[in-house]
Image 1 (cartoon, rainbow, N blue to C red):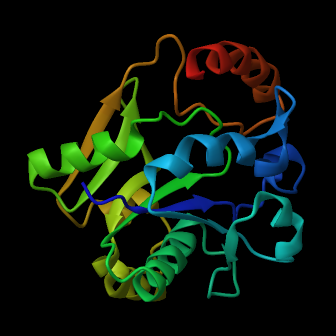
Image 2 (cartoon, rainbow, N blue to C red):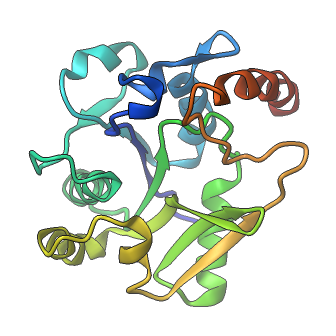
Length: 207
C-alpha cells in the first residue's frame, strides 16, 4: 500500500474561539498539532501543514508550511488545493492526499489504511471519514489529479468541501464513537473541557 501525503489544515480563523490557531491549543498539556503529528505522521509518506501568515509560529513542530494561494479566505478547499499542488510537485510518485483539520486531536491510527480500503472497495474517487452517521468532509483521501478541477471550482465560487466532493463518486468510511469519537473537534470554548477529559482516556488507549 502506497502511503498518501498528509496535510493538516490549519488555515481557519477560529472565530468561535476568539481567533488564533486552534492547533496550538493545549489539550492534556500538549498542543493539538503535536497530537496530530504523532498519530498522522506514521500513516503518511510525508506530512505538512497548510497555514497562512507568519509560518515561524509553527517552527517547533518541524513541518513544512504551505499557504493558500488565494489571498481572500476561501476556507478549507483552498488549503486542499495548496496541498494537492504541493504534493504533485514535491512527491510525484504519490497520487493521494490525506487531509485532516488542525482541531481534531484524536485522529485514529488506521485512518489512511481504512480510507484507502473503503475507496478501493467502492471504486470511488474520494473517501471521507464518518462517525455517528455524520461525514467529516475535511477528513478525506483525495487524488491529487483533481487539483485542476478544484482550482476551477474555487474560481467559480465553490466554498463547500461537501459540495466539491459531491461532484465525484465518493464513499464514507464509518468509525465507532466508543470509547470516544476519533473525529471530535475543538471548535468552541465549551469543547475544551470535554477534550481534556477525552485526552485522558485517549492517551491511555493510544499507548
